[in-house]
Length: 290
Image (tube, rainbow, N blue to C red; front, side):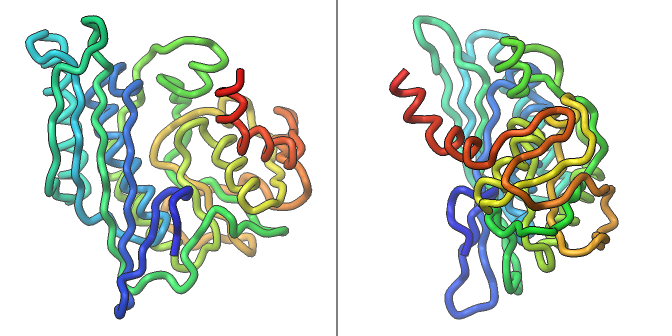
């Protein structure tokens, strides 16, 4: 129903009205800066990825990859990471049903960054009649930003690494209540909204560009600053709807409209949609040929 390339994949269970959603997530850079917060956030990220398909997070498996555990620093990373994963799963009432641990991951004696990976399973019954997809934005739709207010989280962000060439700071903390509100809102909206998209790597600007490119339609964003466009505050997602209201108890506000042939961020800049699509689709070949 929803193939790989979206936030999560959605598979219809044959002969039933049920569907199963899956998503895998990891973030070694954020876990390097704060193993506990980083690990909790990948659980919430994976849960939101299945939620925007209409599926409620149901169970999780993990794959924990670390350096030499005989190094006290590495063992501290491992303990903090496990505590973060456990706390987040408890907050969402999601059991860990399997997993494995890999230690002694090094190159020339240098330990890898702490690299927990999680796989989230979600279920929905009944499945949304028309589940949200990144390629279902259309002219005239209203763009909404849903979830907690921006906290200008740039620790381990794409912007900080690419523009500033740095890796530093501490990822913002998250709380279970905020996570539950955002995730439940996404599940509910998936039954009536054509396009939903979790905001993660690259922030709002990248998430909007991904929808615009996959839907082959431009977007126009109201006056927003550069930090607001590239901030990676967790537990937020984009909703695109017909009409000027959004029925959700989660915090939300209108940020723009769908239409045109460009990705227009107002005073922060504009890029032609075809140019953006070419950059996005051919990024790997260009990198390999450079």
